[in-house]
Image 1 (cartoon, rainbow, N blue to C red):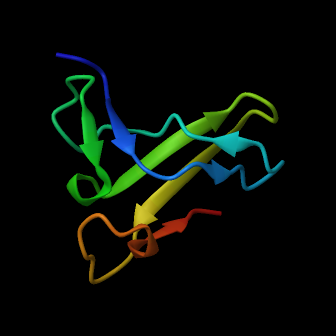
Image 2: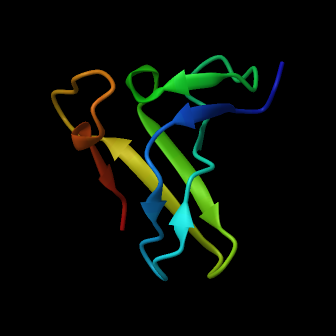
Length: 75
């Protein structure tokens, strides 16, 4: 068993410095180091090495699978 799964999500800017992030992960699925879709998780995150900030997206209310618009960036 792995520690997390990779999440198929768009490349997005870091909320603090704007660095492009694309190594999204989540612990919401089976954690077998597999790639999962956004519709399979409630939140996903990536660490920005540039400014040392965690960027976490959490599903909003009334989700629709695999739509980025259903997620919001946590403050």
